Length: 379
Image (cartoon, rainbow, N blue to C red; front, side):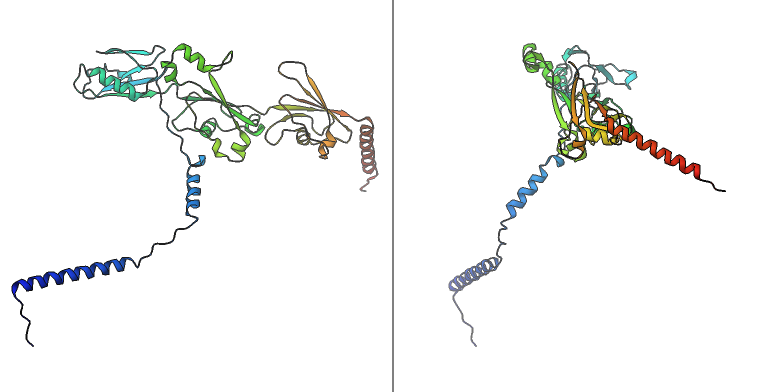
């Protein structure tokens, strides 16, 4: 078979055309191959599922408390060092060779070379930057370091129905539960050494931060902390203990602020007197709040007790107030129960006829027991 011979020019054109056709066919094959992969259909529930996941992620139970800036104030202890220049700040041997300054009520501190500088209402980082600018006039490229050794203001008070009420250091990120655990936990009656807590706890939080107090004019400061004619520097946060502790509603486990006061009022006690099985003091609490619960705690009414019960309540200011109630109707759920308060006195009256029958029954039973023991002859 004879080979086809082409001139050089035609042979070059033929080779270029052949290359173009091969490239085109390859591109078509590639496009056809990629078109075989069909994307998966969109799930109509995808948006709903993503919304549910985002809602869970944003829930208070999963939120870490944000770290708050700490502003210097009276009582704080700070240390100052200058990198590479030990001659700037005098050495204090008692503090391990560091220059220590205790912040006082005076908002200014005096430092070598630069003189007085204000520290109240500033963070350690802000003070560090101001020192860098001030010392740049005397030192080339100064690098001051400010460290807070003692956070005087960064404390929290835990008072009320806890095992160890006191003032505790507050670490950044601490929550309400952290403060309660640090105070030994809540008390729940005689077993834990104190009365059980009431239905609500309270957090008293300062309205102004140290930075606000340091930088705010007196007139504006008074305006911010006054409500009408009263000066109230703190606001009150109320949290239900039953939902928070018993039901585990962690949304109430809020981050604490410096100098917060956590007050857990005790549920208090009531006195039960009269014909009940064991008269005496009853500790109120989450499980004992009403009249029938208090009577049941003391063993219930005796047979000789009257249905009429008097609850005497003495307010902080004013005369005692008496509430006359039908305890047996309440015990049978024929009448709404009565909610008790700390310091209430419960007087259970005697029913003459029922008490006579009760005493007669005791005498009759004692006579039978005495007769049975007298006729008993083992010999």
